[in-house]
Image (cartoon, rainbow, N blue to C red; front, side, top):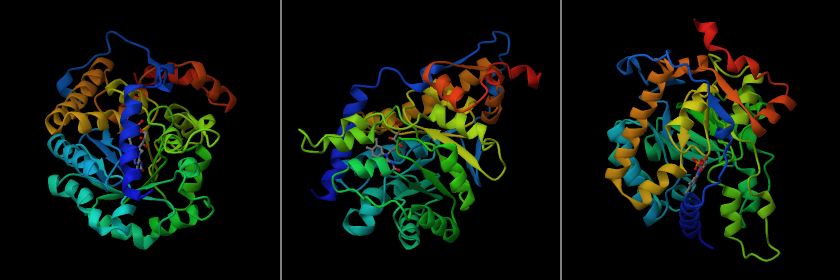
Length: 362
Ligand code: FNR
């Protein structure tokens, strides 16, 4: 199995998952309490968001997906054209393949070519060295580096790593040695408060919890196996949702800290899911699968339309809720039910305060 065909499998299987979405997502456990007279003038809503040293024009971004193949090149080109037009930050998929096989580099660098002035993140796996991280950033002329931790995926991946013991010290070395911000992320199993605290301890200042419920990489890797008794389907859906991770981060005092920024992603379907993540304390929200299907099947014009529509509709939601800026979403009243509520109760997280915090502001 060569690495390019693995990347093609990822695209095909992730796109297939979009056709058969998980019916219930943790975001469905979260609802806003509607206050019909809180609305403000839509023109007063400013979507600008600060993520570490970077200023995002809106509080969402295209999360790291692909690179390394012909199809990946088309997807990255379409995403980059749209990201440039809509001023939405964008990450590429793991640059590891381009470091190992330089002939594939153009499927990544197309992003910078199409979006010379926008915010672009390089992406690399946590087992890689500082030197690899520097090369990835240089190749993409990146404004930051996404560093993914994906032990569950690696385990189910037939050709994956099995030794995760060195990851934290490699992360520490990379964070200490790069002169652009590093965003540590999962790939769909979530980052617990314990993990976020470990990351903060080694100098990480931005993390994307990347929770379960959307693209399921365990399932993707399992689908690449031979079947029969060689089966890991019991690990489908393994991990914590972004909702759970954000509640956990809140309980550890990690939200709103001046030296640590929490981002969220995983299963975001539409602007209301973005709004829910912001209300739960994420500073910005990553979207992969929901954009992949447009970039793959519809092309750059549709992708531009989608990104502009998400921006505009998120602004509309904020106007309805009376929220002039993304970081003010923390004053919306939210109700949490179902499995997310069970998680909060067992972890000792108070949910009542979240349901009546808008009064605090008034
Ligand atoms: C991904 N994702 C990913 N993440 C990463 O850090 N490096 C990578 O190379 C990839 N590759 C990749 C390929 C494809 C085709 C998809 C759809 C996704 C994971 C991605 O960033 C995100 O964490 C998950 O997809 C969950 O988010 P969604 O898809 O539910 O929005």
